[in-house]
Amino acid sequence: MSEHTPPALEPLDLHNERLQANVCPRDWVNPTPSGRYNLVAIGGGAAGLVSAAGAAGLGARVALIERELMGGDCLNVGCVPSKAIISAARAAAAVHNGAEFGLVGGEKVSIDFGRAMERMRRLRADISKVDSAARFRDLGIDVFLGQATFTGSDRLQVGDRELRFTRAVIATGARAAAPPIPGLDQIPYLTNETLFALTELPKRLGIVGAGPIGCEMAQSFARFGSEVHLVEALHGALPREERDAGEIVRNALERDGVRLRCCGKHLRIEKRDDGIHMMVESHGRGYDIVVDQLLVSVGRAPNVEGLGLEAAGVEYDAKKGVLVDDRLQTSNKRIFAAGDICSRYQFTHAADFMARVVIQNALFFGRKKASALTIPWCTYTSPELAHVGLYPAEAAERGMEIDTFTQKLEEVDRAVLEGESEGFVRVHVARGSDRIVGATIVAANAGDLIGTLSLAMTRKIGLGAIASTIHPYPTQGEAIRKTGDQYNRTKLTPTVKHLFERWLAWNR
Image 1 (cartoon, rainbow, N blue to C red):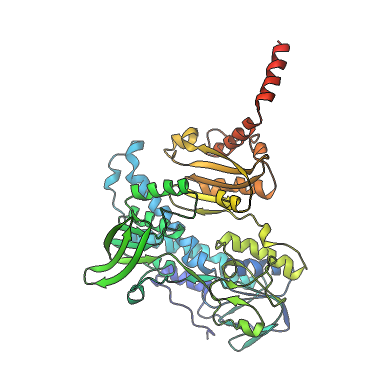
Image 2: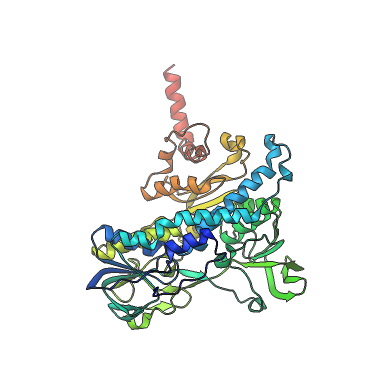
């Protein structure tokens, strides 16, 4: 018999049954602990999985505890399902906009939303094998399904099992949280945790929040054929990014049919017979927007409930999560934390590398610092918007003077040939040097391109050196090299140019 109650997966088709069998098997029986574990990882998302697998691979005795679904948000309700939907929506947009490339009749192609969602569930189930309970058991890890609760500074309880540990890592992540919008608590609404259970396309979809999730889903559902209304309290789309970068994304959303109401004030929600009303003031004008479904994509809350953190002597904040130092150690020196539960960088790849910091510091008396990580991120709209390092405003706050080099994609041949010339590569360097301190890319494959600049920052490769890197022609990666060319041209000062002219005149 199962010792836990698996959460319901909807719709319960063959694909979700496969997912269930991998990430939360109904017949799973928790092992019987024997002795003290070198490391107990609490949470089966990215941070917990990497911590557990990495430690076990180094010979540690490891336990992994998950109360819901192995794979966490990323596999089940985040990166994996959202990118499957985005890829389907991009395919639909490519066909619909195919006239530019000579395709005839593409605008008449119909979209089967149910099939697109079925594809997502199938691919998610395929990928779930990597995060399965059975796989981690086969790695030599004791996998427990159920709620973990600390009962002391070096022990915790899962059901009727008590686990003792030398070190532990809290990796329970965060969840969608509802903002204080009047009337929201009176209606059913979607979050990223329920959106991917849809089987029918909403005719009218309202979205609150033009951050990454809101923009990605707004564009995708508009491309599927929904009438999408996007409400944002701040200005524009992706308001935390550089203004002109966000404006490019905003223009793309609006071309796809998204109706953005930014600088939204006094938002109220009300359910009436004709649908859900979103009443908001935008740029001095009042709107009463009627939709059939509402997606709320703002607000996150750390998963600290039920952990018994007080019993373990672990300090936490209900809004910020578990409090850690730069080595990811909590107020209990035996216990560390990683991922969304303790970080403002709520990305799967950030959780992955924070877990690597934990392994070194918890098991081997390491002195690795989380602040030393160079963490890029990307919003997967069309075009994508990726960033790494400092924004100009952040550099100014630190008293750092910078020089900025921007290469427009309209001057990059591959981007022009692909019909994807709206965007740019922008690199910020410390003034007087070629040391890269930040970068923003708006391009079709910005998420892939940003890795080059992340590598340069991590390995301290200057922008001038990037100019000497040969890229195949034609590729969009040339845009990065061209920013290096721009930097190198700044070294050709009038004095240097005069010396060159004298040398060449003498050497004729």
